[in-house]
Image (cartoon, rainbow over all chains, first blue to last red; front, side, top):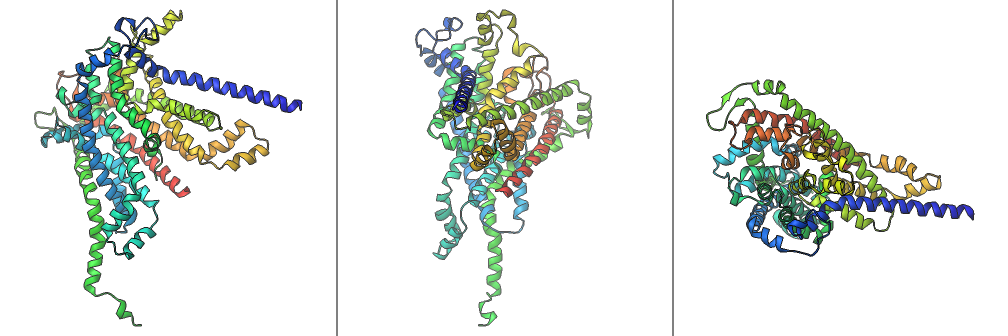
Length: 280
Length: 311
């Protein structure tokens, strides 16, 4: 019996040490975010005196909402993301379906071309894209920015949708055809409704990608008024360089939309973000 | 039954052949159009531009390999290259091992595992721009909370210039990267660990394997391809690093945190209003980034295919 008692004590200690470690790590991980929340509800002169605010002061949010022109920049981001996500979803669903369901000569080679597009880093096409948008009269427009982010995104989304369609049984389509569906009917009435989880994954992945994008957004939109939220925040940091209460409030307001989506759709969200790691 | 009665008329045969082409073509056309217009065209232009000298206003002139020759003699380019290697190796090592260990702890059937996972994942959803700006405030030497904490703990000697210190700037950026990506790679490992058959662990336990043995001889071998994917993702991320570094330091102080990405950006779009932009030269840097990340992307796809076969 002594042996099992000893074993139990060791188990207990091991558990305590593990929890202590995880809690310590939690503090390290959460501290920057907590500090941001705390700072955003402080008065300016309180920033350096204590971690906890003496009283909750939400005036920073009010102050920043209009001073940083946040409704405008958030709206710009939503608009750009809307256009881009719509294009990517429609095109990638169709292409992914074709690669998964149809047999045609050269299919694998065409698919490799799609894969190759996925491997091109944004930096490689940044400068030509700038000139290209300029020549199309799309530089400094939201449509231009949305289009500039379609290429690589479509190839990756196609990749995901192909993998998803391949998990659906082939027999369904054959059954549909026997019942008199056309090829389009099979796609539209049989497979598309079943592909909803895959589409949701791509949607979240792509929306988040565009919402958080910085390099293209800061380069292709030049007028301050047109900027999307990420470059807009970068732009104001000079003006608020030591006003940490305002800056914290601004950053938090910019995180909020993504945070809400994350809290509502946690499972799909994590799946969407980590999908990139599991090719196929 | 004769064969001829089931053979379709030649016209029909031709139609079905045509259909075989047309249908996939119709489905692929929209995606193909955008791919051609917004990847292929700019990519070809980039390759051509790498051989040209151009300030964006006057007509470009063809200079052959001059841009690449100049790169080889450019001190800042080599410094950026060194920084990229430093940053990439360090982030890859830390962002593979730490998430792996934490995923392993959280996968051991601990109570509250979900809450910890949620908490560690939070930084992942925030953009690199916002976390960059947040950490810039934290690292700020005079008003930043990091030095503030050190001072209030009586560790005044430990206070640093952080992002303004040429030796500390890259470690500081690496720390932010680890903080930001921990949850992401942890989730990838965690998901893969969930797929390891439980009876492997049970039979190992019966054979007297302890926690370390089970981790070393079951978990690690079972996660080999996942680990390769994580390593490759980290490597590609390191080679392409731009957003967070640009937002925190713009490559400074004095090129101490310059990466290929920030150097490219500075050369092309400049510290605004400065000397004329060197678009051809900047594109040559972009091609270097492209080549290095292609090498690792190909490895990634190879591994991905291995995964598919194993499934």
